[in-house]
Image 1 (cartoon, rainbow, N blue to C red):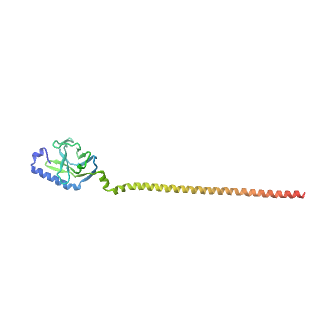
Image 2 (image 1 turned 60 degrees about the vertical axis):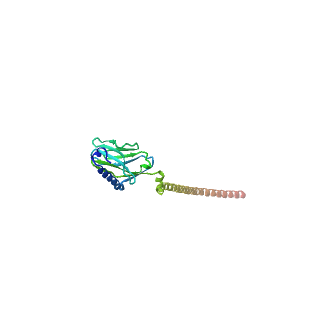
Image 3 (image 1 turned 45 degrees about the vertical axis):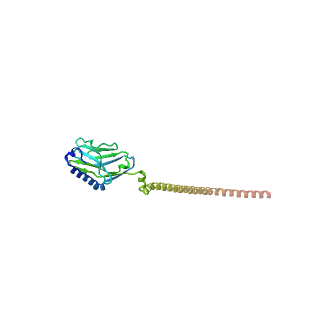
Length: 230
């Protein structure tokens, strides 16, 4: 677990002890970690927080099942210059890119595959001690696995918008029909009132015409009687 100058500073017994502590730390902290799900081909970035106050090494490790942790990448972080350099004793990977700043460290895995699933965490070296971060469990699932994990939930999530849209159309159609009926009733009533007013206006004219005819007939009869008498 410890490399470079640390190898000459501690005996193998201490290294084995630290290794056992690291495995135990992962087992204990895995319950409080995060879970990240991704699909094959996605790019995933994992984060961990560190508290380095002195320049030191920072590692990213991966563990699967009950296997021993595997060192993925390493950086030597300089607190004074806020810069980091790759560790010569751990080869860099094109798919696993590590970043470090004064507070956080990141691990970006490009084009993930199912073999990238596992428990990830970072560790920092402070003198003869190793400090481990909270773990992050990465799960790579096929698209069909994610969609079939809870199909009812996906259907339910799509149902409310569709139902709302359907209800909106139904209420809109009902309102349109009611407005049409109301307009027809108003138009019919106005037409009836107009007919009534027109009929009322024609009655006096009809009465005057009848009176005129009656008067004319009376005068004509009198004229005929006068002519007969003469």
